[in-house]
Structures are given as C-alpha cells and as structure tokens.
Image 1 (cartoon, rainbow, N blue to C red):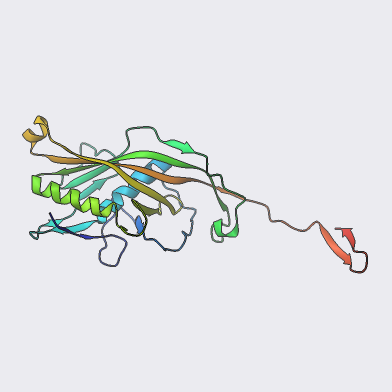
Image 2 (cartoon, one colour; image 1 turned 45 degrees about the vertical axis):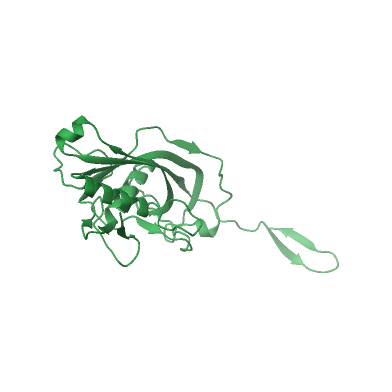
Length: 240
C-alpha cells in the first residue's frame, strides 16, 4: 500500500490543535536552531508529552494510493469524556505505566543560552529527564482506513529517514518550549469479537517518550570583590 504523507512542521499544512489555543506543538527537523525557552508551563511533564503527541498526530495528513484522504477528526490527550461526541477516525494518546526520572544527565551551572528572555531573566535548570511509555490508540471504521492511517503514522513517526535519527522530536510550547523525543517501539491491530460487533477497527502504537524536567531559578549577578589598584613589578590588590 502506498501512502503520500504530509509531514507537519512544514508550510504544506496547518491544522487545529488537539486542545484550543495557539501555539501548538511542532515537529523539529535535524539542524533546526536550539530552542528558545519560555516561562510558560500549563501542564505537568506527563501531560506535556501526551498533549504534544496528540497535537502532532492531529496535524498529519495523507492520501492512499486510491485517492482516499487520510487524517484524524479528533485526537485526545487523555481518555474522552462520556459527553464527547465520537468522530471517526480519531485517536487518543495516554499512559498506563509509571514514568521514571533519569538523573544521569545533570546540568552544569546555567549559561546565558539557558536564560529566559527579559524581562523574566530566570535560568533553565534540568535536574532530570522524564522517560515514559506512551500509547497511541487509533480508532477507525473499516479495514482500508485503518491500514492507511497506520501507514501514515509509521511515516510520521520516522520523518527523517536517512539522516541518522530514529523516531522524532517535538517542541512543546505548553511546557517551557522544551523538546521531547519519541521512539516507536510496538504496533498492532486490535481485532476481537467486541470490536467486530461494534464495527470498530482499532490499532495501537507504543512509543517511548523522553523530555527534560525544568526548573526556573534566579541566580544573583556576580560582581568582582577585588579591584586592581596598581600595576607594576609587584601587583597590588586592594579589597573593595
């Protein structure tokens, strides 16, 4: 099966976010400039990951070899509520296991490149990475649509093939504008008696997500405590 995929993060496509309000998550390409951190944090780390994945998947567009348009009507960052109206195809990003804090990457003293732009001026400190398995469940209504959506996501989850990178990286404006990496680990169909009776054709992707935990801190400015009073054969230093 051949699927033409539009990769989000280019000028080819702009989609509505999974949750209302700009800005939305964007795909990072190899060679993109380093992120500019912000003081915006509207989620915790776990929700930052599922929201980012949901917003990314909602932006993916494609077309099957027979001309069928492929995209998601809705993508949820958590289980839908009973009052949410079903629209197909749809997807949901969620976690079912505990994430881990990996403190092996300790940051050094912050530099000016890790400073939030003025007037905030605080520094970004990363005490640990948060690593968690994420599930993306795809809901469709027929076999052809499911097959096309899975092929679409397989492309979208490895958008930079041949550039020495497995998986993909997203910039998360809802969590300090940090970048999270995602690596697909498993995929399968859900075919059982219940799904056959309901007419659902579902698939599940498993991914491992990693993102930095951020703390914003204020450091006092450093001022010299000595001044040079005289330069000669003997250097004299006078306390301030």
